[in-house]
Length: 479
Ligand code: NAD
Image 1 (cartoon, protein in one colour):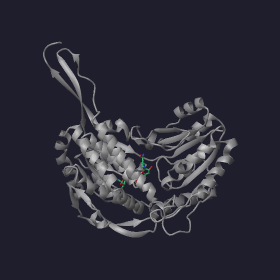
Image 2 (cartoon, rainbow, N blue to C red):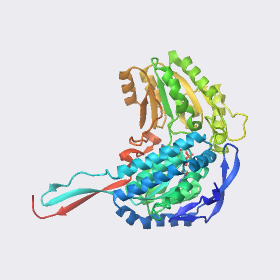
Image 3 (cartoon, helix red, strand yellow):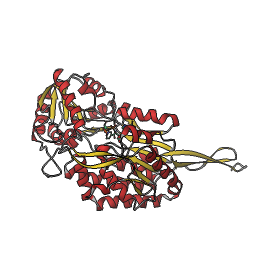
Image 4 (tube, protein in one colour):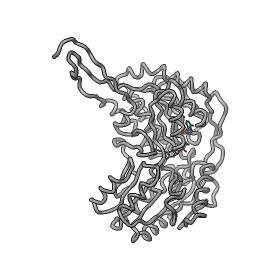
């Protein structure tokens, strides 16, 4: 595909005004193209375009908005090969994983198309004499959506589908590291949606993103990204009191009791730790194991890490794990690994970078990691997992809850009482028992504690993109 045909889209038209940013393929670290760095004037034009298209879009029936979302889902399916190839090159994903992500994104547009038509509120009623009240659930207006690079197709669908389904219009800014599939989506959507309903602008976070998050005509900012970005977006949104929807970082604990079925655990943990090179906000990062089973679990994780086929998954279909997204991110992870190993952690396997061109990190299993150390407390966002013993249920729960994050967690035991009790005590928005990682369009996804505000997916995401209005009709007579 000719990458120069992929541009920002404002008001249904290609937008190319601005300086240029380099696009780097992480499996080779070669430059593969350029992006426009949209400046304030472009952000303003995009927001005004979304604002101008809002009255007509919100005025459509849910059925008509649903039809447009279904057409977007069909366009994703029809162009799955192009999307998957772009995503595999842009972020270094194995091609099969990128294809699966396109399918999963299409599913989200279909889910929210259906959900749009189910939204109802309480029936009208009389709460004061001579007055009938009812509630309207209304869209918010222009939603600024800001996305991260780890699941570009998937997470744009999580942002765009509920916002449009509820009747909002959108300006979306993808990350520089992973804009290509979002730009192809914008191009296809321009054939389906009225101009200005979905605008996509590329550029850097601190400039384009910040201008978008602060724009006075934006009613809601929906960000998926890191915690520092979340805090900054809250600050930017404060002067104009915007609604916030923040899906931030995670540091998922995995609690393995002595009676856990380790065969099941072994089957699930490969994806839970190493999927997407560990660049997953729900990735299993801190494995806490009943002391008697530590050696078994370490052995399992070591064998899993050593068995992974690492390489360029765009070219080689046997590859299971690609590079991390950029040289910058690789260097950040290597720094964390170095500091962990120089303060007492031991790499059972991995611990550095393999001898390969591109931004690769060795699949790494650590032991002897201090609970209060950087690598235990901060997101690594790479193929790195630590294994730590615990001695009691209380100990396990305390360790699991001992970070600022609360996005996801899993517990492994065959004792249903213990599973349910521990699951209730761990502070996380997604809690898995004897598995780790599955999400569903119908189920809410989001964070406790500093992992975020609001829920993606499910009817709750649709509701998050609306506001309630009380309408009271004076009719002068009691019924
Ligand atoms: P990031 O925070 O660096 O960037 C996310 C987006 O925010 C990008 O588009 C970026 O350009 C933009 N941005 C950066 N600074 C900004 C600013 N000052 N104002 C406005 N926009 C700004 O995150 P990343 O490195 O792209 O992605 C990884 C992070 O995303 C991890 O922390 C991960 O846990 C998180 N994440 C969370 C979820 C979830 O659902 N909770 C899902 C995936 C990723």
